[in-house]
Amino acid sequence: QELTLRAARKRHDQWARVMQKRDLLEAKRDEERGRRKNEDRTKLVSELNHQMEEREMARREAERQKIKDLEWLQSRQAREAEEIRRERQMKKDRQAFLREEISRYANRKDQLTKESRRKERDQELAVLRLADRRYQEEQERQHQNR
Image 1 (cartoon, one colour):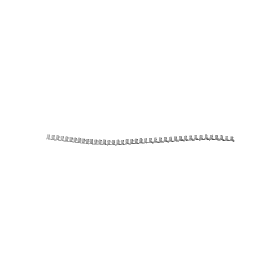
Image 2 (cartoon, one colour):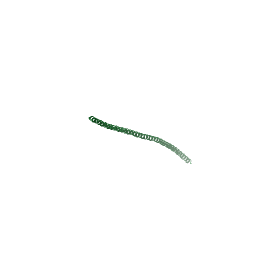
Image 3 (tube, helix red, strand yellow):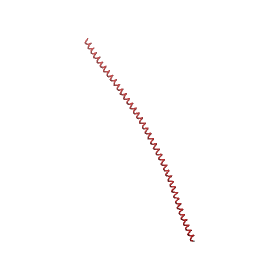
Image 4 (cartoon, one colour):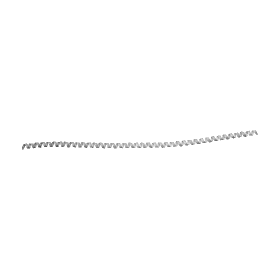
């Protein structure tokens, strides 16, 4: 009986040691799982933070690009407005130049017309004077012949 009792105690002690080892292993596994969970959570939080930072950086970059595009657009519109203003001014200047040229041409034409009429009149007067002189000379000859 004592042997069976010793054997039973021995088996019980062995069983208790096995159970204790198993409990320790389970505790280590649980601790490892917990550590891994914490690492996973930390990684997940880190990844989420990284994603949020990337989104924020992308949002800021998009805002900067939007501002840059607006500035470019405003600059382009200003250049186009300046170009339109310049074209209008050139058109006005050209019209003024053409009006001035037309006026100069008209004045020159009037001047040439007046000069032409004066020359014609002078020629007519010269012809009349010549005719008058010949007539007078003829009259004098006739008077002398009498």
